[in-house]
Every structure is written in C-alpha cells, then in structure tokens.
Image (cartoon, rainbow, N blue to C red):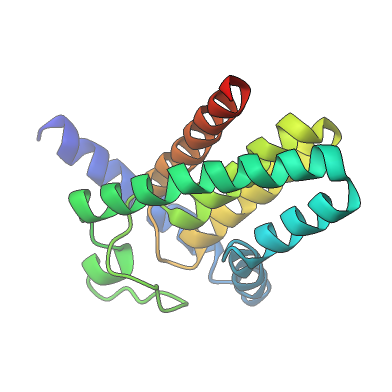
Length: 176
C-alpha cells in the first residue's frame, strides 16, 4: 500500500469515527445549523455592518475580506475541479449524507476555507474576536464531516486554503 492509499484509508477511518458522533439527533440538528452559517451570507452581512459601523477598521476589514475571498474562491474551484475527489456520500457504499451537497467533489472544503478566511480577518482586525472566530470556523468544518459531505483532510485543506488566502490578501493590502 503506497502513502496516498494509507492516507486515504486513515482519512476514511477518521471520517467514520467523526461521523458516528453526528448520528445523534441534537448533534445532527446543530451541525445543519452551523453548516448553514458557513454558506457565505453571514460573512457579507457582518462585513458590510462593520464597514458602516466602524468606518476605518470596518472598511479595511471589508476590503481585505473581499480581496481574500477573491483569492480563495478561484483557488478553491481550481483545486476542487483538478483533484476531483468524490465526496464520502458518493464514494462509500451504503453511506448516505444528512444533506445534499452542492457539488460532486469534496477536496478542499469551501465552507471551511471561507470560515477560516473570516476567522483570520477577525484575528487581524478585531483580535478580541479571534478565539470565537476560530472556534466557529472549526465548528463549521467539523459540521461538514458530521453531515457526511467531507473527509477530515478536506477540512484541513480548506483551513489551510482560507488561512493562506487571507495572509496573501493582507500582504497585498499592506503593499498598496
């Protein structure tokens, strides 16, 4: 068995272990709700609210956020459509996800990438909100595994993509 096969086997075992906790009704209901927070609308509403409420930091938060999402989204689409990893609910026989995924492929997790962009922005512009931001990002990523639409490595890759995209955006922002 080569390294990629070993990683895939480990990822599948980790998926089933994590997903087993998601089968309890309260966990499933909470996972659905938390996952919806990562759909994207909340980030835009909060960014616009901060831009109006706190003109200096809020506007920078919004502009850097738009730049970070402008970096993250094309990279996410490129990776997802190049790697083309089937979702667990499409690959694992007899397994059914709790929700219908928006597309066929799982790597990386777009919900997680977006959540980590937002968490990194909070850490940079509103350090007192860093811990809640990262906790929410982790919960959003975890919810995607509990709902059966992502493997744990999809979440790790999404987190890395979100963090990297935000660091690039912050670098560009400092440069201009």
